[in-house]
Length: 75
Image (cartoon, rainbow, N blue to C red; front, side, top):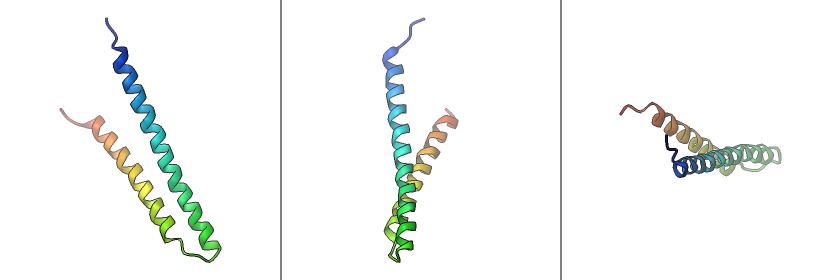
């Protein structure tokens, strides 16, 4: 049995980058919601922070849906 270490390494690298990217994107969404609450408490407008948070959460959901579609795809 021969193990293709280069393929394992590339899968590991891509998985790590995607996982870190999704966590960072979700964190930006949470940060946007926190900024919205802070702006509302100070009496300001929070439309941009809320829109940015929704975009981040939608991108996370799209990435998860794409991953699930890859897993359950029929050949």
